[in-house]
Length: 128
Image (cartoon, rainbow, N blue to C red; front, side, top):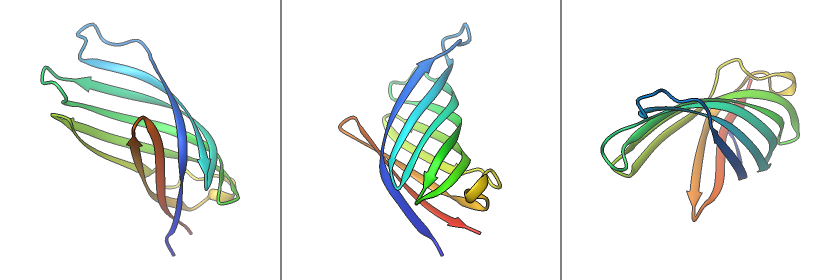
């Protein structure tokens, strides 16, 4: 049975050491989730910019620790995103077998929405 969790989150992204070309970047991620997922997360993001305005890419891994519909534990999210001349495309997947404690067996996909600077999420998941 597929479950759905939704809510909002705040994110702080801090630049870290980048390469000398100015093309590749690295950032730390610090999030606080609210709603069906009450959790904090820490992660790392790698970015690549281009000479074309609005085109870029990123990958990230973040470890989420808290409660999902009242079940406590942690899991890891894997991000992959591109922006093609301002049009975004992103996938965020629960890393297989990364769930701990009451979240062992968690699998799923997260959708992130940004509307007027406000962040929200929807997580479609199963627990085996």
